Structures are given as structure tokens and as C-alpha cells.
Length: 223
Image 1 (spheres, rainbow, N blue to C red):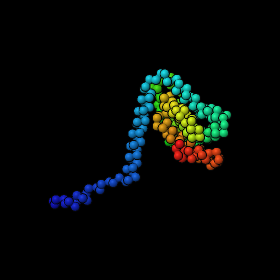
Image 2: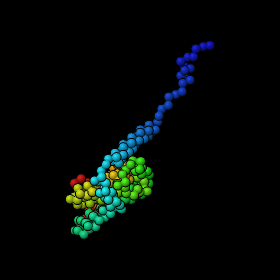
Image 3: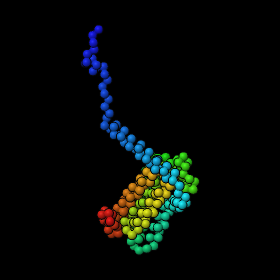
Image 4: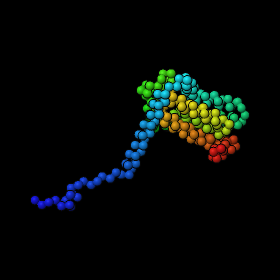
């Protein structure tokens, strides 16, 4: 019997599979997303496990007060009683809320469909509990609307930027603290809120150029 030649071995061996670039990119992206979800879950668990009895009641009330943007609408109502610039700020803020709410609830939540956190498994203390929403978790609509309002009003009335920004940040954190959102949901909501404010201001400048043109310039310059 003759010995197999090297050419016979080459024929017998199956060719090495090459991973298409698109498949490799998808796998890498899936791996990164998996790691980000793990970090997100760890941050959520850390907040849930940290005792904060002095903050629990206040943040629970803040989270509840922010339902349906009640705080923002109240502030807009107060601004509307002021001068022309305050009324423009109120209009811009309400418009930004409308864009943010529609984007979060009609697009974001329907596209991503992320499940809400398991508050019981994370042992979030009952003192923090607010009603768990039935909608998808990503992105945080409360945060998107609060940040959109703060950004739009702060652009028209710069003096309000810091207090409204702090309020929006507190609303976003309250949604994590009460156990109804992951930190990633809140971060995405904040980004969506900024984009919504920019959209509302641009639409306002197009519809009312005399009133919003200077604010559009200020937004573009970041001042």
C-alpha cells in the first residue's frame, strides 16, 4: 500500500471557515452590549443594596410628582405669567416635552422593548416603591421629558439652566432609586431629552423666527 502524499492530505482536510466581516462585527457588537447590560445591572443592584432611609421618601415623592411631567408643566405655567421672554421659554419647554414624550413612548419603547427591572429580586426596599409601569423600560420617559424641558427653558432663560438641570437630574436618579429603571434607561432618556429640546427649539425658530432666532444662535454656540 502506498503512503498518502501531501497533496492527498490537502484534499482530505476541509477548508478553514472564514467569518464574514459582517458576522464578526455583529458578534463584537453583541459582546459589547452584553457587557454593558452586565454593568447596567450591577449599578442597579448597587443602588438597590445601598441603605438611604433619609432619601427614600423624598425621592419616591419626586418620582411620583414627575408623572406626566406635572412638575415641568407647573413651572411652565408659572413662567407663562411673566413677560414675553418667560412665555417663550414656557412654550419652548412644553414643545420639548411633547417631542421627548412622543419619541420615548411611540418610538423608543416600541423599538427596544426592554423588560422592567426585577425590583423584588434586587430587594429594593418597599419604602422606595412607586407603581411599576407596564410599558417597556428603555428609554426613561420621565428623564427624557425632564431633561428636554430643562434644556429648552434653560436655552431661552439661561438663569434657569442650573436649577432646572439639577431638578431633571434628580428626577432621572429617582427612577433608578425607586427601582423602575436601569441606569442605562435614564442615560438614554437624558440623551433623548437633549435631542428633543434641540428639535423643539429649531421648530420654534422656524415657526416664530423673530422670537426664537437669537436663542437658536445661542444654542448653536453652546452659550
